[in-house]
Length: 314
Ligand SMILES: Nc1ncnc2c1ncn2[C@@H]1O[C@H](COP(=O)(O)OP(=O)(O)OP(=O)(O)O)[C@@H](O)[C@H]1O
Image (cartoon, rainbow, N blue to C red):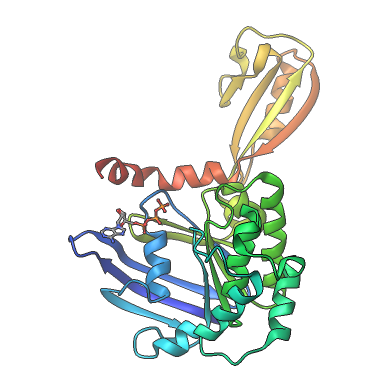
């Protein structure tokens, strides 16, 4: 595995003494989309700000493309693009100038052809001469991405890229991010929309109380931690789960028209065959059988449940 970003035992204690990061360790692979999920106050923004050099770390090491973010700050920072959560743009500046200035700030030589490519990729080329104030919220958000891409970063941080954006635009953004990944940019995004992580990410990292609880391939995580439900629909209507089926963990579906069986996808035997035999032996007739898998959201809620008391204490 080639890691483009390596975070080791990162700690951040704010001036007031609050420990926002408590030994976070995370390796980001080159060319992946990693979603960093965590409840409010978990330390996501602190982690991003520290890696980007906006906040000074207390201890630990961070390297980007092999460059240490403290001793080789310029080289490390040059490899990173940051799309902040808040819209921080100059309203009277044009789109093209905004992006061009941003490139200049990183000390890169002028390259309008590259900026044209970036703006076209983000469907902003037609708006290149428009002032920022004339753009819609979604367009402004894309300008922020264009700014972050203007100096050709290899790692792009997106902090809540679709907060407050409508469903359609959110899907457009997912496509933009997938295209970026395909062009070789490594993407780390934070989001409160779990379905966004489910749709986009290759890997999921979960942070709570300043520590990385888990980093896992998304598909693997969903397969490993997910529970499945089997709904056995019946031609009969039941008032209660039949006694003959007491040995199974069953609950009655809506209107007593089905039995719902929850099983662990990791179990060697799911018990489904035996259940279906016993359902028939109990004199019930099957109408249909359906399975459902728990979502990433269910898994996430289970994982961070332990972190809730800290949040309440703040
Ligand atoms: N400048 C600061 N001084 C003191 N404490 C801070 C500072 N910035 C953040 N914190 C605290 O550090 C903790 C982590 O905050 P952070 O913003 O990193 O969380 P987050 O995971 O990004 O949360 P959210 O999902 O709400 O954006 C919080 O308890 C917050 O109050």
